[in-house]
Amino acid sequence: MKRLLVVANPFPPLASAGTARVLRFLRHLPDHGWESTVLTAEAQGPAPTPEFVRVVRTPTLVPRALLQGGRRARLTGWLFVPDPYAPWIPTAVAAGRRLLAAEPFDAVFSSHPRASTHVVASCLARPGGPPWLADYRDRRFANEVRSYPTAAHAAAMRGLEAHVLRRAAAVSAINRPILDDLVARHPWLGGRGHVLPNGYDDLETPEPVDLGPGFWIVYTGRLYRRERVLESFLSALAALPDDVKVLFVGDAPRVVPVAERLGIAHRVRVEPLVPLGAALGYQRAASALLLITHERPESMSSKVFEYLRSGRPVFAITGPETAAARVLKRVGGAVTVSHDGDLRSALTDLVAAVRTGAAPVADAAALARYDMANVTAELAAVLDRLTAGGDH
Image 1 (cartoon, helix red, strand yellow):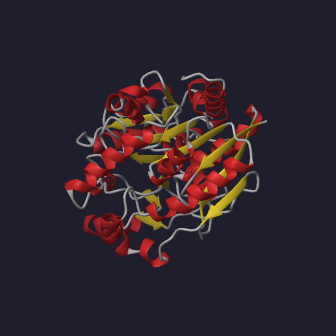
Image 2 (spheres, helix red, strand yellow; image 1 turned 30 degrees about the vertical axis):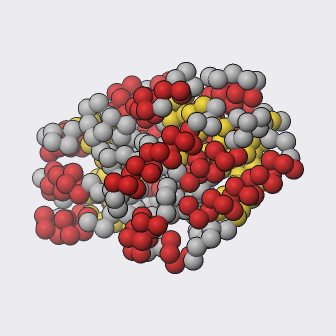
Image 3 (cartoon, helix red, strand yellow; image 1 turned 90 degrees about the horizontal axis):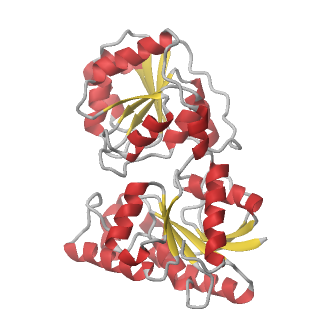
């Protein structure tokens, strides 16, 4: 077995959608000859810590209260570059160097968008040491989507990323637009980039869920500042019969006020975030699933693949050229409509199609591309080439 040092933060017991990709890789890597050790931060939370992998934890050198609540967004944005877990970097680097000195590792892997993980990994990627694969689940350290306290903060982020990536043997990204953006800004990465998409994992078991009577449209996860599209969707829902309902499972604080204003509060439910197994259960109990993404080319959600695997038709509100739209076009199983499109007609047609058994169905062969067992095989092949001295 080759040995991989994985720098991952967040990581269970913290509950975060961002942990699913890394956990799925860790679960399947042994099948391809790789044994992993995870380097992460000390944390508390409800998610079960995996027993199938060794975990090394180090403290974050700031008071816990500083990383929580409203103070985090206001204060840590000023104090910490590249992210609020910058104070974790020194203890993680020290622990990582001890591990590398004491044990043989063949490669290092870290996954963004928490950029502090890439900073830690870059400090461990010394000349003559194991090669480092930097994985991107989101865009660059500094981008137009995120707001910064000052222009100097944004410039510091851009400079830090360029410095960090000079030590990367290769980069991977969840889709082509993210990878192309990386290579365009850092040309030395040309020929060293790989698309390793997100996906679904058949080893994750849905919990049984009963939604009760009616036609249920289900959304799982956070809404991430999509209030305008949300209101358009709920207006389209209001035009449908009363037995057509929607359930938001996750962080959706603006839903209820909009539903009340439209007079459909009795048809709208909001539940808190749940563990992955429960989320998968809600998806499979649905009549149809709701997807809302931004309109930027790289816009994607890992739930796309879980939705498609559930076998339920997807109502996707996304830009026509987004990464999500391209996957849905390739795999099928969805109706897509742009943010400013005719949501009412599209939603009415989908509900009618489901009721008559004519709903769109995903192509099983195309969907298999996104089985994380298969994606992990691609990751292992990249790592194998890096340890053999190849650049790609």
